[in-house]
Length: 300
Image (cartoon, rainbow, N blue to C red; front, side, top):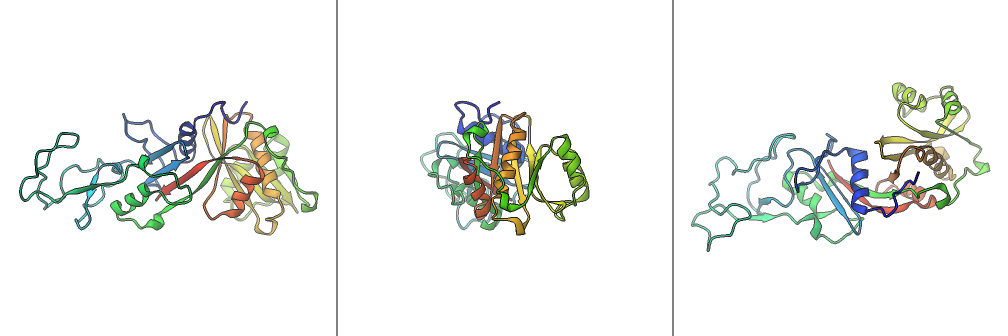
């Protein structure tokens, strides 16, 4: 099964990856999809050829009118409620025409101050490593600081291992690799649990409940793990951890490659994403020859 559909479309891949990681509901008419991830306010993902915006329930669309500079901003609605369409309490009701209608020859005297429109997400040129204007403007609109915006590059795995550089653990690293087949699961249950895994999560991982995985093992415990922190019927996202004292030995690429070989059996598309400043993780993507897709930005 091909890991990337022939003639893939960037927009389809972006929406699929955001759905895998954060969950999306169906689009409502022409509006953006709604996020199911309750920790986020918005997600903006883009490539040079496509972009997708997803909003939490109740968050106003960025193209809606917002108060001009100097105006008091109404409180943001609670998540899950409809965004208010009327003026804030105590302000004069607007006298201008409804949106999408032709404007009269001039505003009535003593009308409410003008509004400014947030930049449409489609209008900004693709600048991958720069936080997108649409999320920065949403920050200002919702009273959040720019530090609430985080992001990083995302990648797609090649269709098959034959399309990627070979990734094996160097013999000098002194580790072995096991995967989530029956012998590997039995071996994993005898390993010492890493301190960054809760007992219940570790039990579910080693039994295969959390999906496919691969581990590099040394001295009776795992020193690198790749697993599927997010997946659906079509795609899976790679998650990789390597113990600090085993980093820089080219172990992680081999473990990720072993995970991908397991997941390719049942998934059509495999994704890998990281953060802007995680240079080690980005190096893994380069070593494996992953195809750069674009950048995913989130607003908390």
